[in-house]
Length: 178
Ligand SMILES: NC(=O)c1ccc[n+]([C@@H]2O[C@H](COP(=O)([O-])OP(=O)(O)OC[C@H]3O[C@@H](n4cnc5c(N)ncnc54)[C@H](OP(=O)(O)O)[C@@H]3O)[C@@H](O)[C@H]2O)c1
View 1 (cartoon, helix red, strand yellow):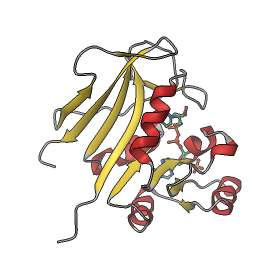
View 2 (cartoon, rainbow, N blue to C red):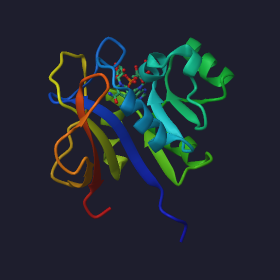
View 3 (cartoon, helix red, strand yellow):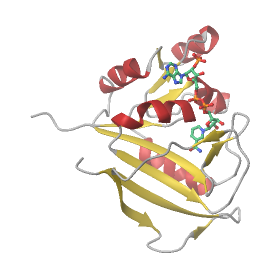
């Protein structure tokens, strides 16, 4: 049997479930960016058009992984293609294209809110950074239910403290029976 693909989602959220505001993340947490790189590097990543646009132009596409961008926006599609990424018009196509890319033993959905909500039913792994702060924002993390179990967290108890002063922790969740 071919090895099973890990289909994961990775995001950072505030205590009140906010992941974004006005097209970016409403916090500065450099340790989380390093964590994100470590999780996703070498694997295809799936994102929505607004998340692609939230990346600084000089950093997109994120290096050492294939970007699959869901969009109907022509100009954005042109930029993604020019820079070597893939453009698709549905989340189903995104998954099919991602499966064909290098490193596809793991596929990571990197946002944003619309894409997480659409692809949560397919996910078997969630990597969540909890940030110990309440914030205003226009984009929320997906709601997941009792079909998920937390496997680990770092640190084992309490929080890391960021150089930015924020407290945060990393959690790994798995779909029960996955
Ligand atoms: N905290 C975190 O970890 C994290 C991670 C990622 C993003 N974010 C934040 O989240 C926000 C962006 O999220 P968002 O929900 O506004 O946008 P998004 O999911 O990144 O992108 C939405 C766009 O993607 C396309 N799309 C999404 N779902 C689709 C579907 N099922 N079928 C077809 N097309 C689909 C559409 O593009 P077209 O309109 O071009 O057709 C849609 O307008 C930003 O603030 C960003 O900074 C936070």
